[in-house]
Image (cartoon, rainbow over all chains, first blue to last red; front, side):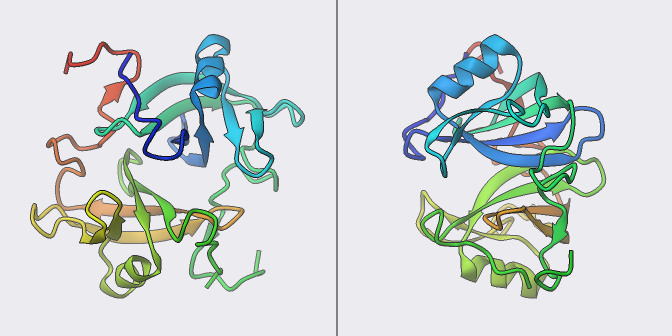
Length: 110
Length: 110
């Protein structure tokens, strides 16, 4: 394993989730050491929820789990890129990706 | 414009950079309000360097600038996804993407 720099971001590693087939970027979430270990052992994504301050198995309530295809690490070892096969939309709004709005859109047009 | 939540991450917005053509995720960096404004006005990516604590025009020294194609914002408005046309490799190591290693590789094998 490549040692990760959990210290830089207060114990959390920024994690980009990308669809393995379409290459669409689905979401960005955060992992602590425990959620990464859960992700490795279960083959599904687990994160650390910063808003709820708890371990979060993606899709546990919605059913929209993400099966891990590969885990890449960036050059300074503080960010992960995980390619997944998603069972459903990544976003809680029902959109395939959380990035469903262009920044220059007016607020509330979608 | 969709108002961004700069407060959540100490004034910095996590920004994913994706190649507009290949869909490869190239890097993750951080933007403050000023770097986002510079990115919008110049059409090239500017970030906030957390290690150097300064504004950073991507490619300023290497020549590997990134021309912005589109800027998307995620559902809770604290993360950006910017698709770009890169003039060269994104990574300072010379790799196209900063995510050139698999996490499960042994350290130092590449």
